[in-house]
Length: 256
Length: 256
DNA sequence: TATAATAGATTCAGAATATGAGACAATATT
DNA sequence: AATATTGTCTCATATTCTGAATCTATTATA
Image (tube, rainbow over the protein chains, first blue to last red):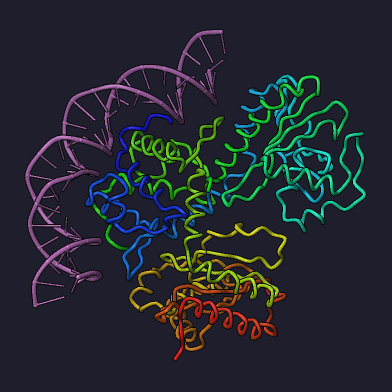
């Protein structure tokens, strides 16, 4: 990635040790760490000591094994509270809008609608905020179908009470057809909506996951079918997925 | 508290910086940090750089201000997941919140504060995680007083250094009065805090013991004094004690 | 618009600090 | 009881961190 900052060797080493505590390996003993990372036993000992002293690690009284400590929990809570979706997403959204050359949005599900939290217009000439706060019926949007797709079945059912509004000729209003498409969305990891919300309007979206891996929001690109045609769609899907992935990472999501 | 470990100055300094990011002050700029902590600007700069490079801090693109980063969220999640107390308590906590119709929490003592490890809100509409990781002064909470009560006297004294913060009119700040109440808590096996943390807020808690009988955490119910009135309190005490008992059993505690 | 002020980034010589080999202590294991 | 293993501690060394000072970018002020 970026070149490691100099003048902070021991800090970087300490952080490296912290990051060894994963879900797969939540507990470490000194000797195992010494084997796993390439550091001197005494060095690790001192670093672990410091981390423990500050509460970032705790030690099992009997076994002497280290685990992540209460201070990490406290810091994590604070990080969560101070890192909202919008600020995490903004930068990536800008990148996405620029890379795709289309409007990019960040949306969440509210009842049976999607709510636009943030938007970067295709042309930066247009004022933003124009659509922020706007809502659309979930079943007729790419983001809505995607967010519904990752909901537990019973919750999804509660939000998809027929009759579903037919907004265009292509709006999917049949529950079975929707369920079928959502299964596809789950496996593919993206959703599209081609003239389902509005004639001539196409959108693609990808999930945003939080630290628990839960899908909490969606990021999308949308534009006229003349530009977002079959040919360009795969590229857009790729871009939107990248953005979703990166925003998720900013929210603390780590794969597996 | 304990003497600072030597041979890790820069790590301790980096952690000190991390801990500056609180709920009250979630965002810091270099110059403000330099003013707040007593370190050289260049040193802080290097440490912040390292922390940012490793994802423990992020930087707002526009303002350049630092915030806690995604890696902290990820670590916090792992810390929480690797806490067996939390997994042991979750089910019982759900039961308790449901049975009492009030918010239920699982808390541990960290220095002179209580840390919320898990919370089930009274209304299931609210997202959890909201308060997880939050801390409160131990002497002003039911859980804190309870956990302190079961500590050896000298440890308790070390964590109750006057002056104790007067959060409401009813907060007990007198050491003798506190000691007296704690003796009562030990014999009764539960604690209450009636408008001691916040006006109108009442909580009751019971101990959680591990396999060798040590009190390692507390479970509590809390709510508005209008609902948790004198009349309902005994019932709540009973419920919270039941939950504490059952969680303890899950941790291997057996009475005899 | 020019100028000043401020915050942030970078440099570097010197010295404090982290390092790691090894010795020792405390536990486990045989 | 003897041995092996893991954890803790010490200390001389030089590597790494430090912080004063400088430079650059950005923002505020005249």
